[in-house]
Image 1 (tube, rainbow, N blue to C red):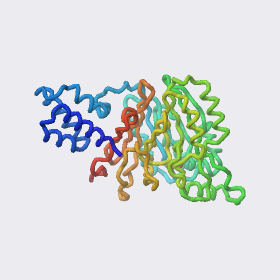
Image 2 (image 1 turned 90 degrees about the vertical axis):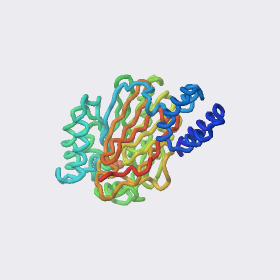
Image 3 (image 1 turned 180 degrees about the horizontal axis):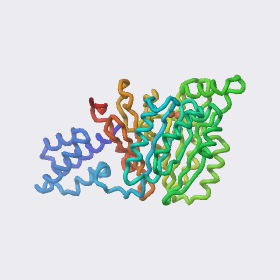
Image 4 (image 1 turned 60 degrees about the vertical axis):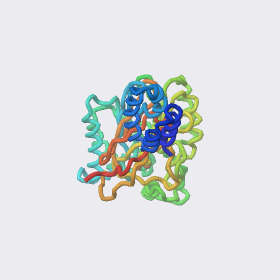
Length: 382
Ligand SMILES: [Fe+2]
Ligand SMILES: [Fe+2]
């Protein structure tokens, strides 16, 4: 799964070619884990080069896949935006734990100096789509000093089919340009009408959708009408312009039963395909989640309310896997984060996990498939 074995094998091969007599050095470097490998390889590179055993160039070749992680050789950061997502608020006042968590994320964002260019809210502001929940969420988000870009989630939508949300925040799909990057915000939680024929009330409809694995609902989609809008919007954009799309559900098919899924994902991806650089940032999955399909990179957002477990179907190989969240620590697996948009339009995704070490997935790691896996226990420390 991880690149460690590959890089170690390359290193072993290079050493055998250049220094076949030093079997112990070869064995110690070829068998160590990646973090240790990086540390030791740099140390031995210096020693070996100084002793004339190998050229420094040889180590650079085998270390190049890892170098992007720490060398600063990547393109410069052009700008940064922060994110808060999936707060699932009940209107039960600031003493409720979800409200406290949402405020914590807002405080993380507002404490930043300098301020990020904007803050993306990734959807599911409310738990049951009620007007008082949405208003409560709006009150909490008001503390954010940077401009806020709102995206809708299914929990905001299915009580009144978006009426209140749109009244508060405007259209559920829109695009904007920022510092040479074209951004698109989609409503990817469109469902076919499963309620009219069955006579479900708005509250029942909302409860069914909020149930996640309630099989009475339809799969999420972007829908034909919105795809046509997207097509028209993207037609005006030069294909060399970096493209970043925000969607609540992942714009690929991971696990249908939990709607970790967008039913017309392939058709949406086809619209993004002509772009030289395309990134999709999504909420809904409440976890560290990364994928890459063709030219498109996909990054999931953390929730402030709770972490979902990983789908039983497994994870895309690009994902930095987190150990199971501690059920006795309400903040474990939750958090917020930021996205650095690089000068070349690709992005580095930062997960600010509240009770664990922060994790980052860089564009260089995705491109070279050198995704750092878990290293021993990464859970909370008490
Ligand atoms: Fe959510
Ligand atoms: Fe959701």
